[in-house]
Image 1: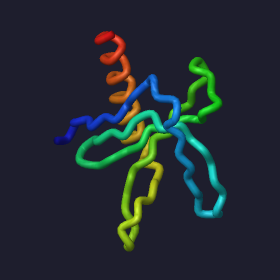
Image 2: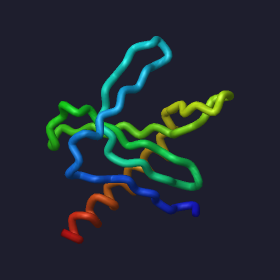
Image 3: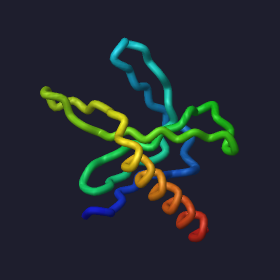
Image 4: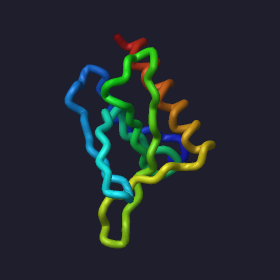
Length: 99
């Protein structure tokens, strides 16, 4: 399963907004692009919901669990984030070819 991708990507979905709270208690709204599995770990691909497609900045977060079993989100190292992003790009290209 080292390179498998579990995808919940839907480019037509507009109500994929999520709110994340940082360690300072500040809330930020993101648009959920996809949930991906890479090398046995789960990741979120998020973006600013106000971004234009040509200026889209994608944020990759690793899904972990705290000691209480609650989901927490961490920034993976650059190599992993780049690999997950590359898989996201490939996945969107594959979806474009199917249409």
